[in-house]
Length: 162
Image (tube, rainbow, N blue to C red; front, side, top):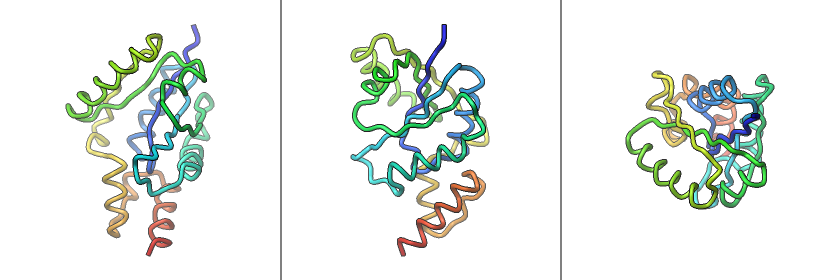
């Protein structure tokens, strides 16, 4: 059975940790849609279109990975795409508690959607988009934490906001 898998997130910005999970997922599942959430409740640094373009740029060499932006409920997007798997990353026990609650809600809204949880590679266990944004906004180097094209986009975004 072909599995269409979603890896949803805000990806503001996409980090090496996200990319690690995408690559690992791409080796396990037939088709991956990296679902970039509009997330209007979050004050994102990059627009939805910019985030989609950044994710597309860093995943272009992965033939079974597709990138799409979406707004609204993730389960509605999953239904629209006929996805039956959801990949989520877990770094901490706090992530687990949050994701466990979401998964319970997803089961109520879309029982056929299964969740698969992956832990990050050890070198990315501490990494989050929030940390990367904060470091970049305060003039620190994030080149070790994001793909080079994302690093340049961050530098440009920070420079334009000064």
